[in-house]
Length: 95
Length: 95
Image (cartoon, rainbow over all chains, first blue to last red; front, side, top):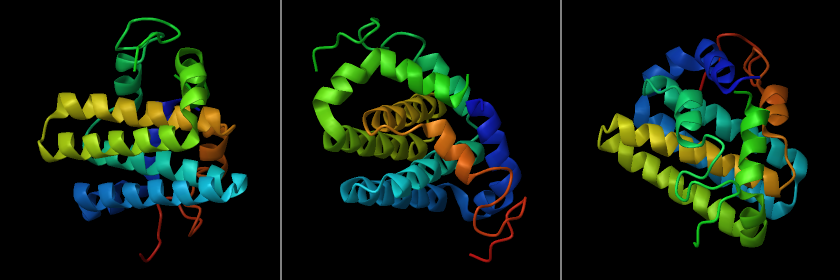
């Protein structure tokens, strides 16, 4: 599934609720999901981690929807087959 | 671009570095990027927000790579044209 298709699916499912909740509330929910992802990873629970990865990208897409940002376009504009910092593939940054 | 293609691009660009950094370090970097996204949104800076959305999905994909998780499969398994909690499209959850 394309990133843009996934974002559009999130729009169909959740845009009204996301809009009502607003940017701050949706961002806070994303942060909660990122925390749950940490817990799943620390527990070594792969099945739970898969669900938390799903939630993380879902809430990121919801946040992109209510802030008017095309997640796929943003991702491809910055990461286009080379590291945006050093310009190499694979990355050769010194950090 | 498909979610899986983006994850594979992140693998080509960053897998060696991500592996060396490890799960905790990569997770911490994701958290930093989520924080930078908040700053961009609070500042109302759309151009910066686009870059931070790109970084957020990039680090999420990096974390999925080093934990052996297929981000697209995880996302589509959980969110498949209906809300995983209430089963409706659009979501009718009472939260």
